[in-house]
Image 1 (tube, rainbow, N blue to C red):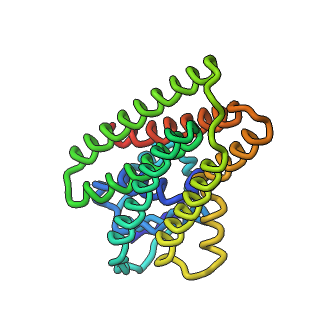
Image 2 (image 1 turned 45 degrees about the vertical axis):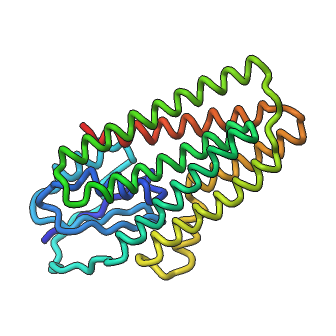
Amino acid sequence: MNKTVFEISKMDCPSEENLIRMKLDGISSIANLSFDIPNRKLTVFHKEGIDQIEKSLLELNLGASRVSSEETEQSTFDENTEQRKMLWTVLFINFAFFIIEMVTGVISKSMGLVADSLDMLADSFVYGISLLAVGSTINRKKRVAKLAGYFQIGLAVIGFAEVLRRFFFNESIPEFSTMIIVSFFALMANASCLFLLQKSKSEEAHMQASMIFTSNDIIINLGVIVAAVLVHWLGSSKPDLIIGTVVFALVIQGAVRILKLGK
């Protein structure tokens, strides 16, 4: 058995972990994958050469680079029996907040909340693909990934069009209080998801804290809160449109990664 360690510089939340798992699924030489997200490390236990595995990781454009490779006597691995249950839990939380933020975003006229809801939907897609594809063929996984990716891009494009419409036609100012309250609860939801996903892998508090504070999702939530404050302070909808544009761009970036799994 061989053990190869990779540094994945852009792996900063469980969504990237699931993308990597789906990408490497089907490579028969892999015996086990061990993720250390806070330190952005992936350890691959495999039986044969590493070339195919390394090529697949590079195709994801997540900044993968090989750190070390050596032989190991380890041949058995402890599987986390709670992983599937936790994936269902975080999928439910993300999808629930997709609905909550979409509805409140439309009512409060906030593009920041609408865009963040799509980011929640993007995470739901990743977890959903992982769960629905368990035990399925690689071709089915690719079809589901393509469908999710194109749907996500379509929603983001519609969002961009709405941002442009509001920019040129001077829509009314969003309700900043709704933006702050909903984004705060979304932030707590993201923190809970990250805690649940990492709980079984490490009980060390600093590891969990590192995950939470390096999460792109939480940064987005904070961005919407800052935009809400600026909306109220400046009396303008422009900060909301700006954060909406940024988040829509991130949603499309995530969709492109998902589409790469369908190749």
